[in-house]
Amino acid sequence: MIFEADCIARDGHTNLYKFHILQEGRIYRVNIANEDGTPNWGIITFTFTFFDENTLHFSNMYIENDDYKMKGIPEAVIIGLARKMKKTIVSSTQLKDNGEHLHEPAKKVWERLVNKKLVYFDENLERFKTKINGIL
Image 1 (tube, rainbow, N blue to C red):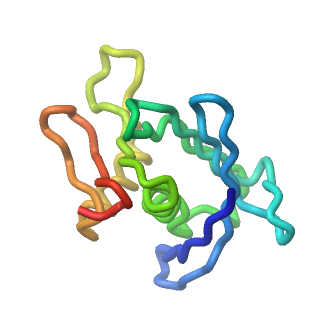
Image 2 (image 1 turned 45 degrees about the horizontal axis):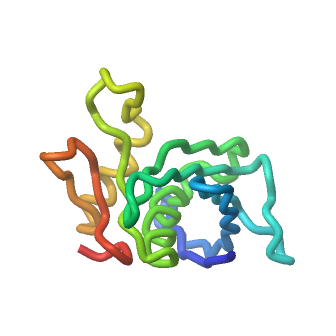
């Protein structure tokens, strides 16, 4: 599966990227797509796992190539995948005692989305959260 998203870089410049979604059982991996739609492994990899039937957990964010850092890609992938898959996306928890933890770079991504009113912090879950289709 492929989706496109406008990514707004820290300098305000907008780039349109194509993303490839690969489902492996209960895991989705998202990568930058080549021109032919195939995944370009090694540049970026975002991993989402099933949290429940209607929700995906954003469990891993990996950007290898510096040319793709500070380009707004994680924000675009979170919202784009929520819309494409019609699922809610949640962050890792801020609690440290359950085997997962929201690291500071990821927290900043989610906070930027809160500022844009695209996600909110769910006090009950202790996680940032989108709504179905990425819309509040």
